[in-house]
Structures are given as C-alpha cells and as structure tokens.
Amino acid sequence: MGKALSPEATLTNERTAELEAAYNNRARVPGHPAVLDRWRKDSLRVIDALRPETLEYGPSERQKMEWFDAGAGAPVAVFMHGGYWQALDRGWFAWVAPALLEHGISVAVPGYDLAPAVSPGKIIGQMREATELVRARTGKRPLVFGHSVGGCMAACMLSEGRARAALAISGVFDLEPVTHTSLNDALGLDLLTARALSPIYWPVPNGSTPGGKALDCWVGGEESNEFVRQSRHMAAEWGGKGADTHVEIMEGLNHFTALDPLADKDSAMVRRLAALAVAE
Image 1 (cartoon, rainbow, N blue to C red):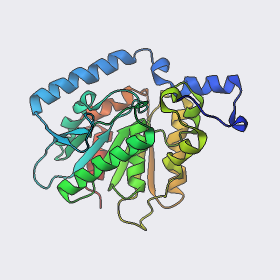
Image 2: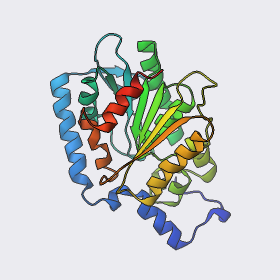
Image 3: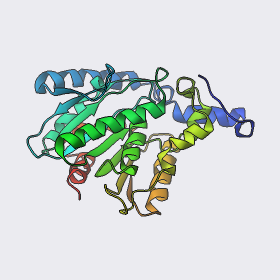
Image 4: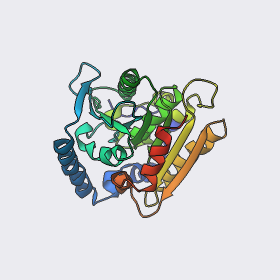
C-alpha cells in the first residue's frame, strides 16, 4: 500500500522534501552502515558470550525475544528496536544488554514482524504481547525503552499501563509527518490511522490508573529539527497532563549514535535506565 492522503492534507513539494530529509535518517546520515555493522557484530559477540534464553511470545518466527537474566527477582528492561517498522530485527541489539546487566537489571530484546507484511498497528500489538509475557514471567511491570519507532511503542506501553516507566531514544510520537515521506510506502498509513497510532494522542499516564507515569525523551543533538521537536512536543504534551516527563538532548550524537551510551554502564543514559527500572 502506498500513501493515502486526503486532498486537504496535500503539502507543497518543498514541505514534502523537508519532511523526507528530516525523517529519512539513513539518507541523512551517510555513515550509518558502519554503525549498523557495529551493532550486528557486537550483538553476535554478546550472544556468544552470554548465551541468553530465547523465548517465544507469538506464533511467527520473528515473535521471539532474547532474555538476558540478571538473577531471581531482578527488575527487567524491555528494549524495542527501531527501523520504521520495516527493517532490522532483535539480532542487531543484544549489545544493549551488558551495561544494564552490570546494574542488576535483566534485559529482554523482542523482535517483531515487519511491514509491509504486517501493519504498524499489528506490530504495536505484538509488543503488547511481548511486554505482557515479561510481566507474567516476573509478576511486575517492566521498564520499556526503545529507539525511533521503538520509542513510539515504549510510550504506547506506558500509556496502556503495561510499564513502570519508559525511556524513548529519538522517538517518533506523532506519525502524521511520516505519512508524507517515502518511508510510508511500506507502512501504508493514512492520516486517520497515523493519528490513531501516535502516542502523543493516547491517554496520558498521570497516576490515575495502574502503571508508571515517567517518560524520558532522549534525542541526539545532531538529529533533524523534527526529531528534536518530536521529543520536546511529546514531553510538553504529556507533562502538561500529569505525566513525569524529561527531555535530554545528547550533544554531538545523530540518530544512530544516539544509542552509543547504552554500551557504557557509567553513562547518564544507563544510570537513568537503572533508576527507572526500580522506580515505584
């Protein structure tokens, strides 16, 4: 399916080009292949060294997760990967586990089916299933954190009361701008569906229902103005309605290197995750 836009939503060619440049991160960061290669190689080394348990949370081949166990009773963090719901898989992100393990936090890295074979709404549903498996296994709501659309899904889990807290790295919280880009060719989102799947419009976790209400939005200082705006806008919207929100601009980091702090047990990001993982 391609883009399905109503006539009144049609943008000028100039504005469409601006959004394409802002959201197409692979085109924006020419050096991204080296970063992706590093993720993959580091993950293979981590899996070989730590031998995580592989859990199935659904019927498809991609509905599995790697479970890195920090011991009985340890808090759990669930990492949701990015790729605009159409690229990458859990095997690229095992490297995010070791730093959190050193803080006594178990880490789950679920995969999911990809567009265009399945819709973004279906993928969000799969992350519900993965998060609920973790909750059933431990008896507690996990911390959820994710990158790009993984950050979007982390916010969704928090909105629905499935998480104790969420940290989004370079999150996309309003999907409407993406419908005007080539990234939507595989997603097939129309404007109504994009809005329905955008957590910025979802119920705000404000303490009135079970689950946590802390949402951190971390974003690289070298990212496009749109990505910085998304994080600031999300924090302002939810924060103004009772959520505990925080924005962190990581100077010198782009959409891909924004994940680098996850490899360092002493980084501000890992320390923040460790605190959120045990927050009540």
